[in-house]
Length: 294
Ligand code: NAD
Image 1 (cartoon, rainbow, N blue to C red):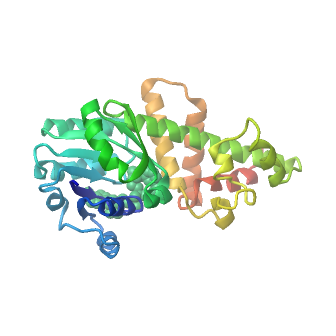
Image 2: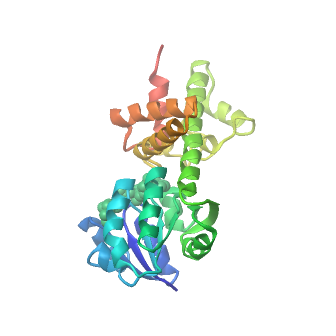
Image 3: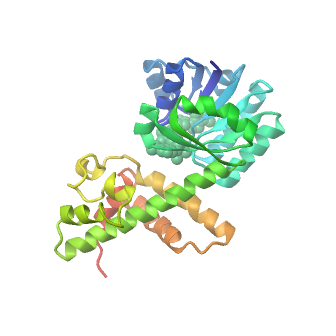
């Protein structure tokens, strides 16, 4: 059992913190939002008065915050409050440069650090079946692993600091591009007179098979659990996909890679995000694509 400070009790953080409590850890949690704190209290997650109070005496400090700027700002308060050998785990999805800056701030203050972003969304966070992608030195990974295992099913060591964020944005670049590809195929099939179900029955059993098709099909009908069958309620919101593709696009540019489809996907999701799609599941891009004419 560890003493764990958990900072950020939003859509993902609250169920993750609840799973740490369930696993028997001594959790002290904090969120800047009073509403998030009230929901956490109802869910039985013990609260602290501030981030610093949560971190005081903690063996492990987990952050689950929106962006890199939030993580770096929170670390200014959390790092000095934590005990000297505390392990800092950031599970937010943030820029690789920010993850490396967080690593530098933590190690500069004598603390250990792992970036450990997640895949699996709110359902995975609730069920404790997340996949963690971890960037850390080997010894730090070994100490983070048992804590992460209480919130997820798979914990993958991707390499040194920043490697977890790199794996996360590369995976989500595949997802964004493949969702657009599946949506264009269904829109084209429709114009060619194909039923959604017929195209699904072929592609799901052929070389077009992918998660965007078989688990999150953007066309309503073939996959009953898909957000397409409930007015595209997320799921994984377009705003988050746009954010992750933006991170992937800036990493591609910084590394000089001509990732044309990744950059195009970032533009397509940026436009949809700014034009009414932000709160919809990212598969709703299908509704926009099928309206398009050249
Ligand atoms: P969210 O906006 O629901 O929650 C973030 C919480 O952080 C908010 O409650 C906010 O009040 C709090 N916060 C911000 N700054 C703070 C600070 N300094 N101290 C304490 N609390 C602070 O976001 P979310 O959906 O839970 O996502 C969190 C991270 O996980 C993001 O980086 C997101 O990209 C990533 N992620 C989300 C999903 C998903 O499906 N929602 C899936 C995978 C990864």
